[in-house]
Length: 320
Image 1: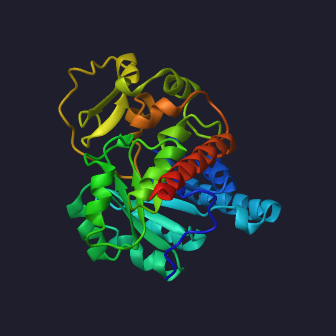
Image 2 (image 1 turned 90 degrees about the vertical axis):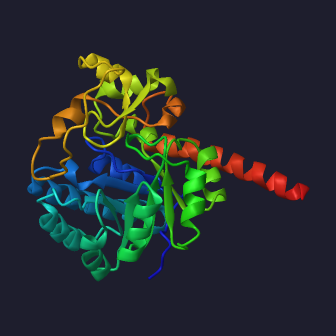
């Protein structure tokens, strides 16, 4: 199986974000030449997921006709494989029908998705936050790894991205996506230089015009800085990075948050939706957000920064 994702203008996944990534954001990202992704739990009930996948498939078919196939990036579905997700068999059936080129599994083993996705020629990446999970995912047959590191928004990791990628490269030579605080082209170049193949970029796209985030959420990102983030397991049961102003707006003291509740990732219920709808997450790259703007403008700016970073690296090579 060809492990490369093409065509790509930049090696970026517009990371799948709960209650933020929808069909419009996915299609806009792919039209801009990067990977557009969304979490399947965003579409509830299952009939909504069917509709979303149909809209994405049709939207990308039109984009390829309009722009040319070489200009449109692939799309990605983010699948929760945690045992609490009672909707997993139905999600898998829709993957088989609509065939996203990439599926990133999260909060569980990638094994449940591998047979289905490989059956239509797609690739399975496993979302991992530490070396143990990375090794298990590789042993389970994952084609690639999405290494979520310290600095990521939402459910976050603890490891430094440079150290994490280096450690994974000791036993895995497949494609690696790395995420955590990367929001500009300079960070993309740094990730490639350290051994990653692609970058997960989420927070930068929350404030995109095409995202499903509330206008107030987008504006809070524009107005906030890195010191406004709080990492806690007290909201969902899993460590996540939150905007402190949104916690305060909902009567929570960022310095005295509750104990971690039991975790649940069942896509067939709405139990966890309210928390994420009212409490807003962000990663350490939020400082790069200056305004609410279309995905196309964001990607164009990142590309300019990326080319500048390449020139800088080439300059150092010329000195050798």
